[in-house]
Length: 122
Image (cartoon, rainbow, N blue to C red; front, top):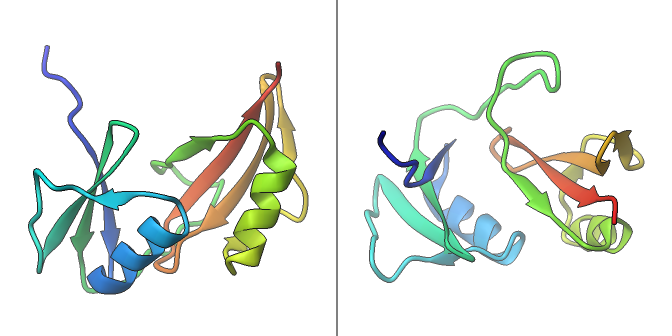
């Protein structure tokens, strides 16, 4: 069975995406894989993310359509939400939402892609 090797996110401005994903979410440009000007490989704690340039931003009707999200785990969801707010991130929910395993909040990158910040119950 093949292995998942990375997650691809389509973005309409590659330079802005590199800055946003690195400065806002803590990814780093991979020293091993780098494909600029049409794509760039980022890494965070062993997770590879490929930013790929496309012409148009996403228009995702979250949570009503099928989609792929990056879920980012945090030990303190309230502190992490405040950190995202302070960085100007567009939050989808006003407050964290409950789900059986904990709480989450949805947010958008500058290109319309949706991701979630997740805090699991201890």
